[in-house]
Amino acid sequence: MPPAKKARTPKVEPATGSAIDQVDTSYLQTLMGYNARRAALSIIELFLERLAPYGLKPVDFSVMSTICHNPGVTSRQLCATLNLLPPNLVGLIQSLESRGLIERKPHPHDGRAVGLHATPKGQGLMEQAEQTATELELEKTAKLTPAQRKTLLALLQKIYR
Image: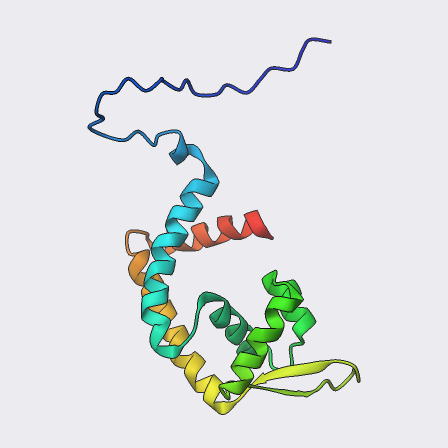
């Protein structure tokens, strides 16, 4: 059996002490993770700025949005859906509850579980925050056509689903 072929790695030139006029990132630009991270960072930077008035960080926003769109969702379901660790969610839920944005109610079918519900204050906050998020995403993806945006979302979701 012939030996397996090694993946070709780009040739790295040794430092020569000379200045570079333009930085070559051509290899990095072939990497999915690099491009996804760069795109995410450009959106998250604006997200943090625009959602600061609502007192929501990205994880707070994701949790609140999921609760608003799924009244009665359990902490276990939130962890599984958003890929969160239970210890990290406990403090977040307490914080959102102390702000009056969510409330806990007994689960209708499981006596051990508690359903999470947005309060009217939380629902109102999220209506505004989701509108802001939608506007900033449209702004950041303005170079894409609606069809390209839809395709990009579908392709990204194929990676993590």
